[in-house]
Image 1 (cartoon, rainbow, N blue to C red):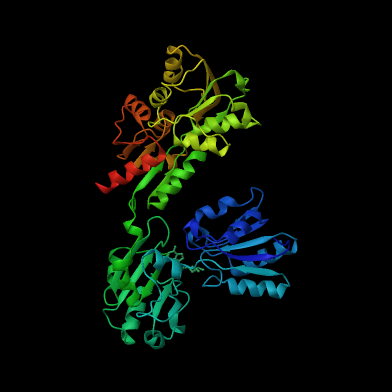
Image 2 (cartoon, rainbow, N blue to C red):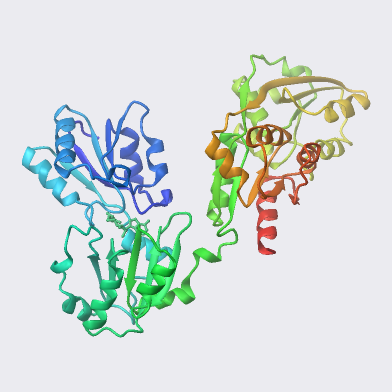
Length: 486
Ligand code: SAH
């Protein structure tokens, strides 16, 4: 980034995945970020902790920060030699006042750059299964403002010309003016049975689409309480939704799923669930804390067992040469742990079919063990060391981290407790989540495996589904299967 420059950046329509690579790069390095309301909530997560992040949109849905004030801030911060990102929903040059801000920079002699974004008028229809052009149905598309703001009269729109436009009409800011839009287009000669789609909260969790006709759209949108932000698409392409709606067909569409595992592990599971259509509540009930514990001489062991991905990473934090493990058989409790070891260049010799301590004991049955090292959390089960000792091995348990409660704020705890599903991936997530969330209000309970299910039952909660295999992937499969049946 160049100091003293203003970057007019589009943040896309809401799905954080639709933020461009360039936008993410600029957000991550900006000194100052001035943003609107309609940007993905996650977009600012990548900002520098010391960046000045300031909201310049409508305050609490009320008064707008005056445009001159925004211009003044942009110019003042840039003059002070700072890198300034002006972050807007969708594309900055599509109904975003980006043009005005670029002109203000030009007037002030401030250099600026523009980073286009995915605009809602294309993205919301796309997520609703509507292509805005189609070789046979629409050879053009017009982007039009519906003038949501009653202070701005829509007399500037040439309705007869819009009605005559040979292509798709896409209205931004047109929820309140929907009755007028539909009536004017019919008055201008469009057929009352022409398809119209209204896409509310496009690309966001909870996206809703109403497919209607010019004749009945106003009344049906009112009946279904469609609210801003929404995009209205008028034209035969809207009807393609009947065949092309893909979002709603994803297996976990419309399901809210709480993920209770520790933040670093939660993200992969949450991302997978979102991909499948779920709205995810990240409610990490636990966090892991490294213990001040050195490694013994690994050459003394002929077996090293690692019982969690965390354990694998904790081991390598303390090990600067993987060859220290050269002499030992390395066992991982499951595929996740094996993957974590592989990230550090170690391929596990033993990975049981069933990812539980019992499975590992079975898998080690044919292997002679004199002295074993068990790498794990402080609060692990004794099943594995006891079984190995029972076979005459000397066993050292090395606790490299501990699991402690992660405080849950009330809103998150509530959102998790009222989700369609709550997922538990370890006994400690059960214990700490139930402590934090209190009463569960009807969610189905998904457990990753028998040890977690046992912890649930001990707490008086009967799991509705248990993963097989006992892995995050198994858990996702079990959720899909359960959701399919209900
Ligand atoms: N610059 C933005 C548009 C800003 S105007 C862009 O390029 O997308 C604000 C209007 O955009 C809203 O009133 C609504 O009509 C539309 N809009 C923005 N985000 C939307 C979303 N996620 N779903 C549907 N419409 C959206």
